Image (cartoon, rainbow, N blue to C red; front, side, top):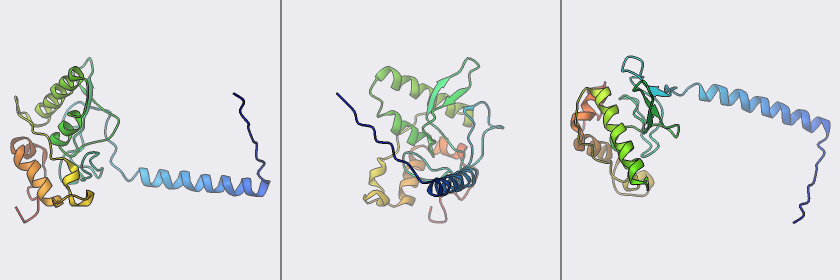
Amino acid sequence: MDYIVTIYRIPLERSNEKNKLIQKLKKYNELTSDNYTKLPDKFTDLDSWPKKSNLCCINCGFSSNKRMPFFTPHKEDKNGHIVRSLNGMTCSPSCSIFIINRVADPNVRNELYRLVHLLCEKMTGIKKIDIAASPNPRTLKKFGGTISEEDYQYRIYCMNKEIMDGLYYDSNFLGDKF
């Protein structure tokens, strides 16, 4: 199969405009990306882990501005530190479990469950925790469902109260409604 390659010549003045635009975009990206919390690549201990984050959960879209950011683990390194998956953070262990439930390979899924439990233990000091998966985020009003954001967060909290109390630094994280 033959391919046709067309080379376009950009006049010099348009090329300069393009370069200026690229430089502006790079500066904009540097400014905006620096406004987001940078999470370490692995969880080593509570002292070095951020206490809150302005990043949004990749599962439900909520921010972790009133709690410790959580993540879906990828693996445990040789020092026992839990390496995070590079595909984002979650707002709770429940959202991590919801994501893990979609993994097809049962062996991989079981290893990820083990790592979430280990991470919860390291973050909260509580051993042998049952973690319920968050409700499907498609049930949220913002995604066309029927549940408000407050009700969704409250459901996650109630399903995993023991864990969630250990992850929150703000005693009024659910607002005055609850």
